[in-house]
Length: 293
Image 1 (cartoon, helix red, strand yellow):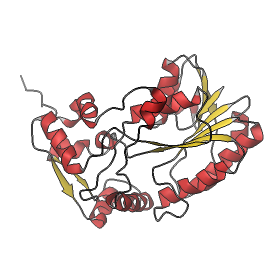
Image 2 (cartoon, helix red, strand yellow; image 1 turned 180 degrees about the vertical axis):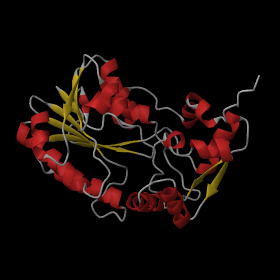
Image 3 (cartoon, one colour; image 1 turned 90 degrees about the vertical axis):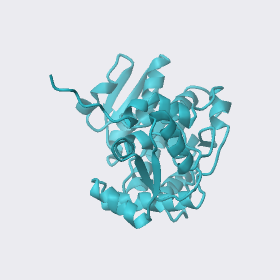
């Protein structure tokens, strides 16, 4: 049996959909089953649990052989991941797939990458067979975060200069994770997952412009201004600071990486940014107002 965490989020729900499509039964750890109704199916068992309550984790892992760890981004992230890894070891989980991030390192100046790096090292020393997934930055940031700017202001704002990035489609990450959770041969590996090309934001602006038929401008903003804009949009200050730290590393070239990992594991080509935009074009187009009769 497989246990998923984060199954209602951006990545986790793609893993859940793929497992369901392939006919696998699995359990999903959720804090509130009533708020996870979208996961309900004859093949999915919702289990109430909390990363901060080790007893609930151990109960959730009864009979589990493979587990997927997608941690919450909080200041206690490493502690919460450690709780999960300890519970997995104590419960006899045979294989644990950890969701991490490109550039994860216990010594990173980015707190997000530091937390992931600490948890990676703890998992490696746990004695559990593991795979660590380090995805590049999501293409879906452009639908989840920047789509309104693109629709209404014909621009998107990021503090990364002309840095390149091997942007990856979350749908591909979901397929890859589902694949390694359900087959052998990937244990004790660190897998960096990217899209097929490294693009800077001016090139992305060109792709968006061609798709929507209007000029979409990339605005390179200062980190301080970017952080201020995030907080004004409702992002907590601590998280805004953490994201700014990460983007400083992106601007220094951290994400200018392209790998063949997705194809090697799935035997499918990763989606291009053009394909991503085509699939989500309606989100980038300004909605036409209904004419009054």
